[in-house]
Length: 144
Image (tube, rainbow, N blue to C red; front, side):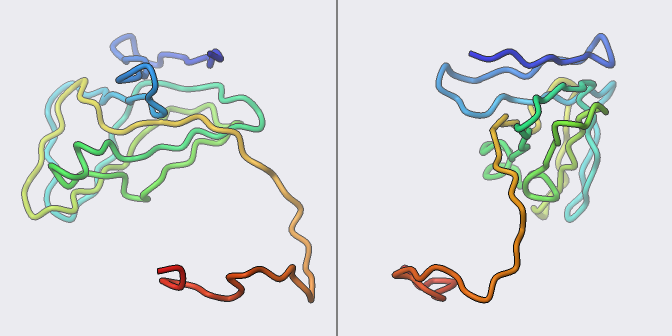
């Protein structure tokens, strides 16, 4: 297992935790003093109190926790948050309430999950020709 340096910006912040040994995503926790409400169709910014030193060549991707998304309609407003390797500010999660019910976020509640993963950086080069594939230009729904 690799090590990732995390700075607590607040002593009450909770380091990310994995739910199981084989979990890909580590849970992020809300750093709140009190409960906050999220009205239907509203977004709120939830601090974690953490800053991370994500290594060069890696990215932190913030995803919804399945229980929040399916049971309460709460998910990251931008669907997937991106924490770049050169960002050293506080990791925050913008949660959107896609339900029709007022939701409450409590202090220390697990609000999202982060996956640290490598990425490929490329040079974008214009070309008049692309390699042929079996799929070709088949788009939405073309693979059944």
